[in-house]
Image 1 (tube, rainbow, N blue to C red):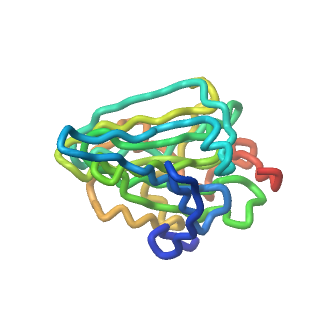
Image 2 (cartoon, one colour; image 1 turned 90 degrees about the vertical axis):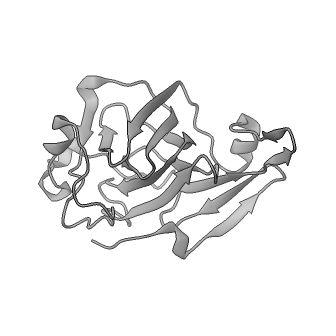
Amino acid sequence: MGVLIVASSFRQSGNTHMKKIATDIAGLYLIEPTVWQDERGYFFEVYHQEKFSALGIRDHFVQDNQSKSVQGTLRGLHYQIAHPQAKLCRVIYGAVLDIAVDIRRGSPTFGKYVSAILSADNKRQMFIPAGFAHGYLVLSESAEFVYKCSDFYHPEAERGVLWKDPELAIAWGFETPTLSAKDARHLPLSQIAAEDLPVYSSDR
């Protein structure tokens, strides 16, 4: 399955406070804020419902999560089947390689992925629609990763895809990451039952 890297094809739109950067997967975006900076420090808007809506991101977020991980930690690839979550992801300390894989049955980009470096320095966010598997690898000595979710966490609905699925061929750039026991047991996408995968809808 092919590989899509966002750096290869940015298409930009936005307003005076944030810029939406389209990727090769429809509906999946990077968000780049306008940062006001002077000798005191900086300020920028992380999230503004009306402005995000104007950019076409109209999901209602109900839960915020934060994690801290050491270098080489890989979390993912995670998704929920009965309660799919759109996610708005960013890094407040350090840097990560963020990955989103389209696993929606019937999608024209099924099995494709987008990767981007999110860091405290670049202040970029990745908006991931519901129906994608998501994961990230910590590149810095440690990193703090925060993300909004459009549905609550339901442990019984949690699913995963193997991080080193050979058909996905994700370019992690790291051979031996630190994984949880659960993440190490995930199956490749081709071995996951159809009923355990989300369904593509062209309405998104």
